[in-house]
Image: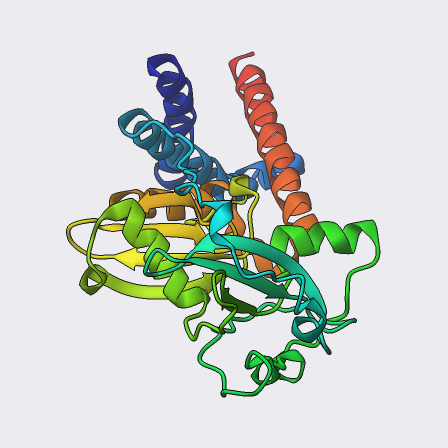
Length: 317
């Protein structure tokens, strides 16, 4: 850590002293040719150097104080034998007019086992927004008639087809499925609670904190500075806690697992590292353009540094 801090600190010192020289040392007239442009470029390129090095030192110190470890934690085992209701018997009724994307046996809010029936999006559409499944109207035949969600999906983006489009969709965290139906695994009755309630229940199991400490619950469909792409799992639900937890938990209701936990004290550093070090403030221009801009500036900074070295050698001679 000391060696890396010394090396990155030398870059920060180079940027700061370079700015100081530009401000304090002035020439009577502008040098001709490339030497004149070198001074102008120094003003522009010193800022990225300071941004990279300062945010890097901040990240190094934070990582030393709180070593980064995987927060992925599996939920409690669910007794498969508790799913007494034969879901396959009424499968034709459940799937009528719907595309089923997943079936899972999960532990509900009150500890009872539930079948989570994940619904697929309509063909040719991808979701991205939140849909919190709430109570459905009672209907005959297992009350399934009240769960026609196809018409409720407002997202109308085209399905990605090329490799580049698929990669971008995965990175952006396009929600791959629609809402979910919850059925009592013992009786087959429709459960009125949805993903939001289950997310609260999962977070409660991992924190032991009461629901009164929850300050917010939202669906996360994109990676961000707080929920990084290294987690490799979307969509997830974010549950924010005040005292005594003071953290945000990210849970997967489809598997009943805790994916990540970010303490409030870690969030400022993650924001700085994402937007200042990784230059994610350029996200509106697209990932390819962002990489090109960062690469050009890095190359220009090295060229400027070499030009300064050659200039000093020439002056000394």
